[in-house]
Amino acid sequence: METRCDKKTLRRYYTAELNLLTKAEVEAKSKLICEQALALPVLQTARTVAAYASFGNEVATTGLITVLQERGFSVVLPVVNRLARTMEFREMETFGSLQPGAFGIGEPVQGQLCPPQQIDLFFVPGLAFDLHGRRLGRGAGYYDRYLAQARPGAMKIGLAYQLQITPCLPAEAHDIMMDLIITEERIVTLG
Image 1 (tube, rainbow, N blue to C red):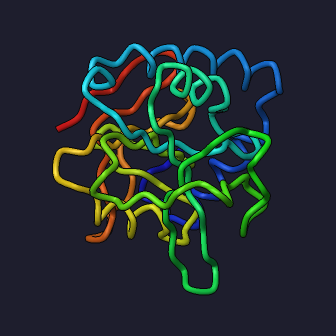
Image 2 (tube, helix red, strand yellow):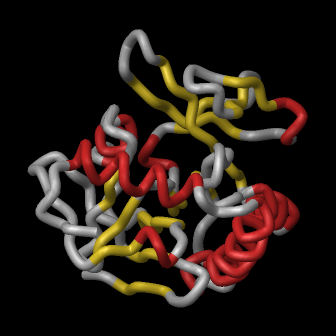
């Protein structure tokens, strides 16, 4: 994909690419990505992990979240307030307790709210990532605004398929960079 394209064009391109994945491809690739995520040394010192309830053909996080909870981590998921254009993270109890949120994505409705400074590690979705740590989201800016409040040292890890990696994405001053990107083929270390 031509990286000099504007973000809107890139969003259309990567959304179309993701939509071409079969359910079997999503499952197989997501399993490899999540296995690599669970083997990260940084998890040895983390207590609170922010993840996301996967939507559509995003990297599926059900297995990742299940294992994290089994290992005793506090797992928090995003809750979006579309009216206020804000996002916060709330502790997830069970998958059955998730309710469709503002964009139809599962959100915890009863768990305790978690301040950004308490989160040790973020697993972040995106439409595309580049080799410099830039992330292309869906365009509403929820993650960039929230991650700007994260405590220094909190790891920001993009989860993506190899097809979502591009050499360079357009960047803006408010874009928050990732520290690592995990695909089914490799871990891209940044910074």
